[in-house]
Image (cartoon, rainbow, N blue to C red; front, side, top):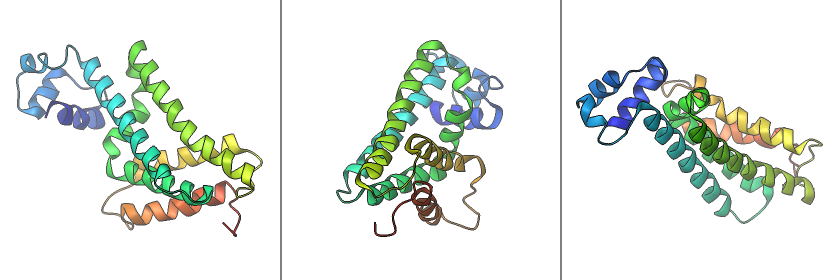
Amino acid sequence: MIVASAVHNFTERGYHGTSMRDIARGADVTVASIYHHFPAKQDILRDIMVSTMRDILEQTRASVAAVETTAATRLGALMRTWVLFHTTRRSEALIGASELRSLDDRGRRLVIGLRDEQEAVFRILVEEGVTTGEFGTAHPLEAARAVINMGYSIAAWYRPDGEASPEEMAERYCDLALATVSASPAH
């Protein structure tokens, strides 16, 4: 309840605009009871951001490992997972996108390390596709980053009551990711 309230409040008000009283009110607990679980608001933010990054990293790695065919097929699976995460867990994704600046040094190092690991999942797969000839991009690093950002930014504008379901949006973004890396039509 505490973390859910913090996610809601950080999404609505931002980290700096949210007080421990706001979090306690949303969780229907006292401020003092929050301190039994988290020594400070900073610890709540760090917990949200680190656990969110670990969740998505675990999901994306699993999606790539589950598909043992072409780099294009694995990139499609990776992108579907990436977009589904950012359409169904929008609040956590938005906090991750906007509150890195609010983390203390320890939290920032943890989150940046996890982001680097996440980028590597995309980068290694794109580089593999270029090496095997499946992808024709002359700029694999930039293509990987473009694909990451394309899926990442969806959390800022996607609405569940919009024109496409998360699954439909994931399919559309899979096509866009494959176009970004210049996937060969044969693959």
